[in-house]
Amino acid sequence: MKTLVIIRHSKSSWKNANLSDHERALNKRGNIDAKLISNYLSSVVRNIDFLHCSSSKRTRETAEYFLEKININKQIIQIIDCWGK
Image 1 (tube, rainbow, N blue to C red):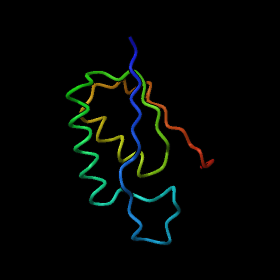
Image 2 (cartoon, one colour):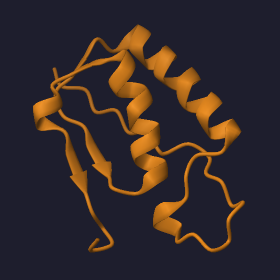
Image 3 (cartoon, rainbow, N blue to C red):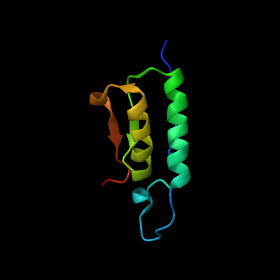
Image 4 (cartoon, rainbow, N blue to C red):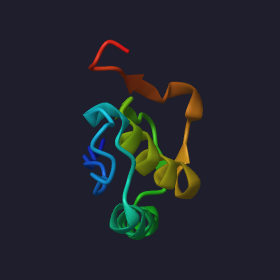
């Protein structure tokens, strides 16, 4: 049976008002939370067949935590660019 796991990006920083929404990075809490949830998820999910990820900075940073913890076939990771960049 296939399992679908949907995860939203972690908390992003609003420190720099000059950055576009697409370029906002994770803040301190976002990094802590991403590490916690990737640790938990790696205890219940061993392999991921497909990772579908936005190209926004905060989303890519969140995904990196999962790439470190869970066996993902990196050749099928797909970054979707919703902003035409």
